[in-house]
Amino acid sequence: MKYLFAPLLCSILFACGASNSSTKKPKIEGNWRWIKSTGGFVGRTTTPESSNQEVHLQISKDSIFTYENGEFKGAVPYNLQLGKVIESQKMEWQFEFEGRRTAVYQQDSLLILKEQCYDCFNRTFVKMKE
Image 1 (cartoon, rainbow, N blue to C red):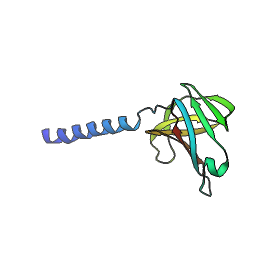
Image 2: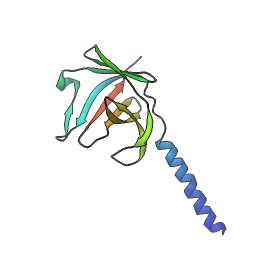
Image 3: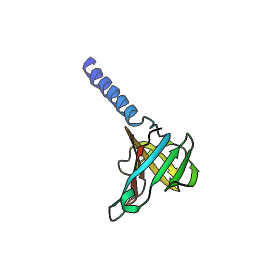
Image 4: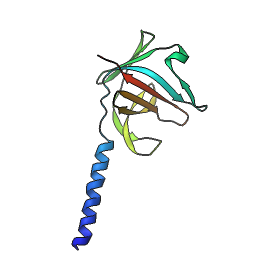
């Protein structure tokens, strides 16, 4: 019996550890500068240089303020919550922004926003120095 219990206990411990690491809430508050967008059905990449457009997001605890070329464009409320993403069907952090569900990933100083539809865009931002 003890030989059956040990593998079961190990499986439970590893499963619990894996689920906690993938659901750690990202720290997205702050100022973010857009560096590229990729996607669409043609798979194009757009950058500030190729579009002649500078985009800046200012994210507070409950709202996202958007600026284009230094001009305020608007603010939208958001609620960060766990939900299934279409790429992996796993539970990931996401919010609804401009009418679309968007998965939110943070990697060091990068913020990656992945729209949750096929042929949609992924937008990458870099954290601005405060």
